[in-house]
Length: 228
Image 1 (cartoon, helix red, strand yellow):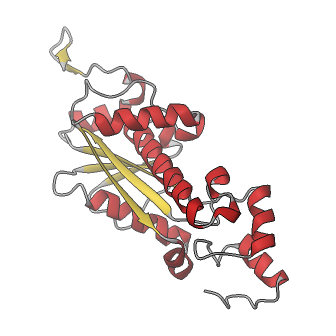
Image 2: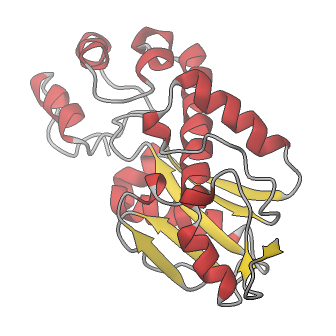
């Protein structure tokens, strides 16, 4: 941290353009500000994953942070390694699996994963910046930011960790269920995934309550809700 000619704090960072929300909170006295995001909400197989990231040293924020969807796979993985390797960066990741999603619905499952990721950083966590809509039940005060993963460095970092964690999870799952191509589509509703689902039927990782899965179950003669 340096000071301008008037003595006001100026935070120096290679990601300064993405730190306006964080700086506003730091200047209000919230020194432990977390960004939170999820991955896998729209998938029809595998868990929904949330990550919460806190930068405790504002001079050690990796360059190149952005919404994970705007980065290539290699860029995401490179940034993941930088985020995990920097001791000053605090983070937590939480998963809610497909069975629980079927029981409580994807919105509540996403909120649960976010709450668990945030709770893992207590008691230090003071404030949370949330991507998208407001989340019920977070353990500290929060601000939701639409398209926050492109507007906040903390949220962008969380989006990268959530996405890469989930991608790696699905690659590992593909070894147990190789017929579905999870390592390729990561559980999203792609043409290949639909073709494999029609050919082989659902496995324990599929979200039985999701419409594409329900449609295939119906076509195969199962009653709606029979398998979940």
